[in-house]
Image (cartoon, rainbow, N blue to C red; front, side, top):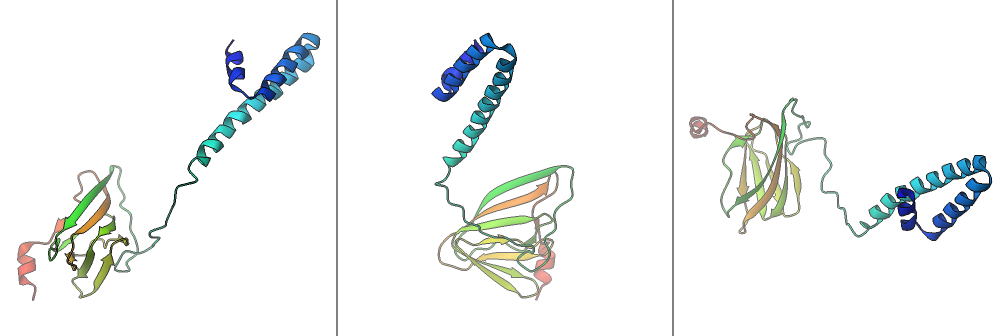
Length: 182
């Protein structure tokens, strides 16, 4: 009964094959078994093809590579966190014109995408990096830096931390250390 239900969903060529199989089984049980195996293989292949057809529905999707990198913004080699308790955090960060994040560092890998605005990232060694709408970046790790909105519009960033449970994604600079800086 179940096989008949499946056969009703198949194209007519499969139904015709099933009819031939039924006839063959009555005439010659041995060749009927072989035919049944062929039919089952055809049914399996048919349903596997369904996955291919389903994937074809996504031909209208556009993919644009934003970034491939082996280094952070500062040129340091990317390091992954070793942990038994991984945790991913995604944030929307907004910085008003003239605003900044304050000096901070990340003990975990961080990736960002500039949704709007102009961002300048400054490092303590004096280097600066500029990012605009549409830029993707691998943030510096274990290095104090400050992100500043260097434009007149709001900066919006999609930020992704690949950290660990119970590990802070951001470490703010000690205010005493910041005030001692020339």
